[in-house]
Amino acid sequence: MGRDAPMKSTLVTLAMTGLSLAMVLPAAAKPAPTPAPTAGSVHSYILLDRTGSMSGIWDEALGSVNAYAASVGEADEGEIEGADIKTAVTLAVFDYQESLQFDVLRKDVPAEKWTDVTNDEANPRGMTPLFDAIGRVISLAEADKPEKAVIVIMTDGHENSSKEITRDGAKAALDRAKANGWEVVFLGAEFASFGDADAVGMSASKTMAVGQGRMQDSMSALAKKSRAYGKGEEAEIVFDDADRAAADEEGVKERKGQ
Image 1 (tube, rainbow, N blue to C red):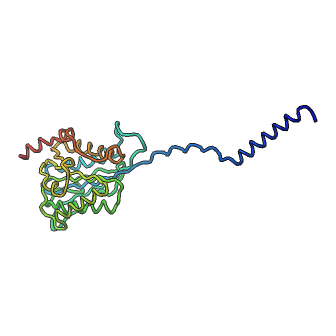
Image 2: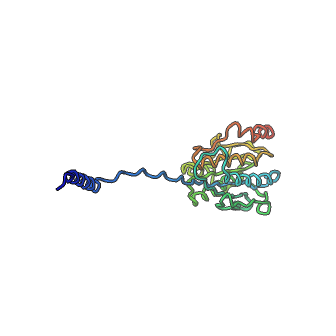
């Protein structure tokens, strides 16, 4: 055997040992891939008073609903990064004639597929069964079971004709919505008396008077707050001093003697 034989034997032994160890030892763990961000979702339920006293601001009220639908579906410049949020909007209008009239004009419509609601679909009429309408819109949301929901109540008057549920029943419905983690806000359309909102447990930070001529901008701003809540950027929706100034809340109070 030549002089190189011991060296070759040693190299073969080391190679076999390494192979055996590779077969016995577990492979080094690979870093887990970073999961892709998943899209959140938020469903907005707009409850719009269509009673007779809304006649003078009806066109603007409808325009503000359409402005909300347009804005809630559009990313904002300052929005947190991540997958885009899925948005849907449901619109119901209400009044009282011989009984509660509760008409769903748009149901679970993706914001990007929204078609503007017009006067051909609803006109002001009747009285204000506010508590009944609140109960109905909460039931509508409960049937859908969204993970995140924003319920927007817009009215220009006081409760005066509910027959289905009482004030306590409306409060219980809103308490269920809050227990689900949903956001509820109350807008007074050229109206600043929030006694009914207070009676059903609405926080003052979630009620705001909106002046005539300011509704579309205020609803667009509210839509951006809804997106922020849906994406987890904000834990809740509240109206701050800037929102109230933009809505001309003080002007409404002066015009209404409050």
